[in-house]
Length: 393
Image 1 (cartoon, rainbow, N blue to C red):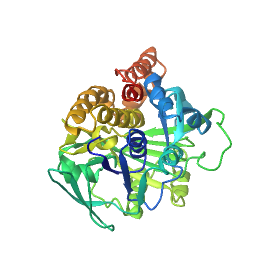
Image 2: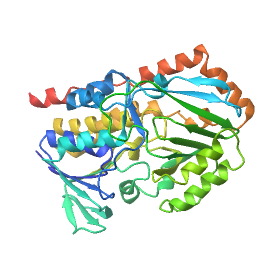
Image 3: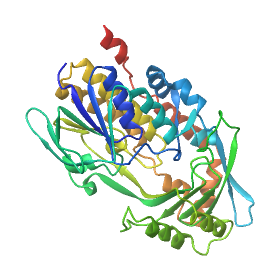
């Protein structure tokens, strides 16, 4: 087997999934993660359709995911008086199974911990590709050289920036920001799947506030051009949300008061990654770093399928990265199109009162049911190879 030593940057979803499969095929895997440990809890993520389930079953984790599933949460849209004006089924937003991001990462981490090296509290600071490998400099650890390097480090990927170019060349702002605040109600210890729940959402032009969802205790979404703020300055980010929602009615004042007390807080733009190629020499991107589309509805499934495909292609090619990466690009460019046209901001936080009314009407129409069905079909639109069986021959 060629190119056996591999470095994966990121230990959220794509990273541990890729570590699982590369280890399965005999690669020597190291995962580096900037956070000091796995991030527990987090917002809920979902899988949908036979393709996602097939990959998870081949990993042997489908039933464990089902045991940790959060269930389904419907969203009732209300006006300032709390009167229902729209309804969005949790079957649309939650897929076939929904699980907290932290729970999924821990499941995959435990499956790989014994055979893969995990380095927490560090990150890649520089990389240089040579004829024989990729020389890596870390922020804290000693330099090392690996045969292959994978960026599974999210939509703001450092690996992509170092190997491909500035983020502005590949990440398109979609006109909105979102914020999740407060740990999901189901991030605490739980003994099994919960009953169906209900969240409540309130719209003003260009703004949405949701209380009580499974993704987090609060979710905000608002229209805005690209904002200049420090992604490490949480206090400044809180002020941005407070300013955007100042003066709104319904339960927004209560939500903002609670938000100030939450330790869990995350603000980011709705953005889409647009790349002609997910690979460059001995370096490849997987998951949101390659084909992310914030809250587009397919990100987690794309990450898990992408990890399965690139690892399988490497195994079939006997570690020949040039051949494997070419096949990976061809397969995933087509499949990743499922997230290409989604813009959750326009749909969930319309910029006008008329747009909000049209959205609420659309949620109850037959066209919405057809759109949901199209999304389910698109999630399965891939000729998925049985890599474990093919490589075992």
